[in-house]
Length: 147
Picture 1 (cartoon, one colour):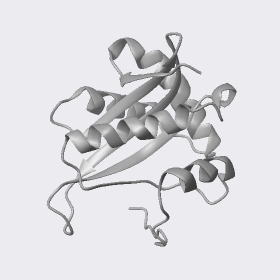
Picture 2: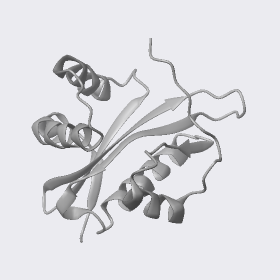
Picture 3: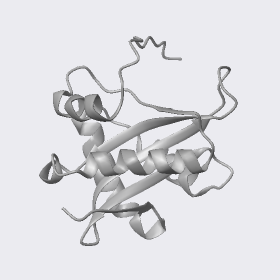
């Protein structure tokens, strides 16, 4: 599959939202539209540490990835948290996820980041197959408290 990756722009919003809703459904989650709108606005704000990229096949958006840059107490360069990665179900296994990860890595290097990292659910077997080929598991477990 011939995939082009680029920063999402205003004209991509409807297609982004379509995939964003499918991503939420995949994880059995629902994010209020007001938060999705806020998120989209943050992507467009150069003062925000958040970015969004899209994978396009023949001008159709087939995958999205969001990343957030933040400081670390362990390194001089920022860390890049790859927060959301989603490929349309019809395109899975065709290199969309890998291309999006590689693009985020390239952009993180350009920004001087020291590390890129992400999480996935333990039940996401197809994604884990890819992730085990492109990165190493940290061995850390995630704990959280909702506020």
